Image (cartoon, rainbow, N blue to C red; front, side, top):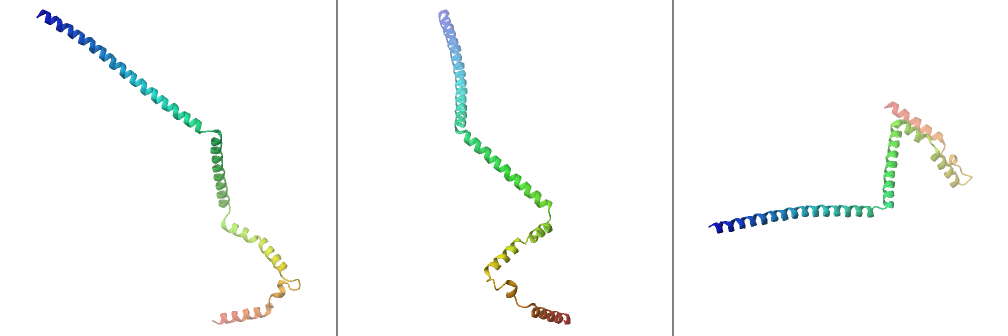
Length: 145
């Protein structure tokens, strides 16, 4: 029995040592696994960074600034136009539009160029007296109603 007990004790000790070695190897494998995970994550991050850096050249950066500047200029123009609209009322704008008779002057000049020199625009109009008398007759009829 004693020899059997000694053998069993030796086997238990051997199993304990093997278990400790196995636990050590498992721990080492876990550490190695975590280290490899960290390395692959770092490699992927570097790859993404290199892709971004190589994809972004100076011309694309400058065009982005140009687009931003264009948007700012558009917004400034809108703000300025809104300010101009707010500062003047509708009546003054209408008066300003009607006060400019440049178009009427140009139209008269073009008509004068198209008409023969002997005939002027005033000569082509009918005399005003019959129109005035008809207008006066219509006014009298309205007054009687």
